[in-house]
Image 1: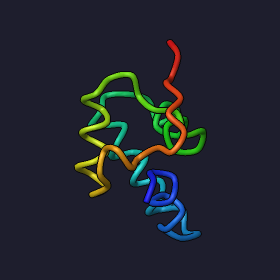
Image 2: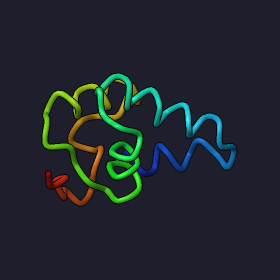
Image 3: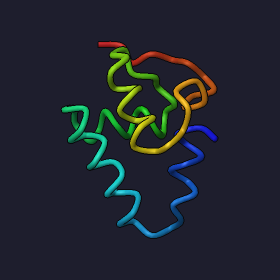
Length: 74
């Protein structure tokens, strides 16, 4: 399961999806827009600590979070 798949599995209700984005943004100390890019656009964070945090939050192995490994450009 990828991060995008996990996000989609939360269903059509906005609150669980919004909560996931807000939680990850807070844990990683980034904007919600950045987290949406990681999820929706399959952009992989440059900071390896962010990947660890997302893996711990979702229970998805780090190696499975992204199929396409684009990195967010600064």
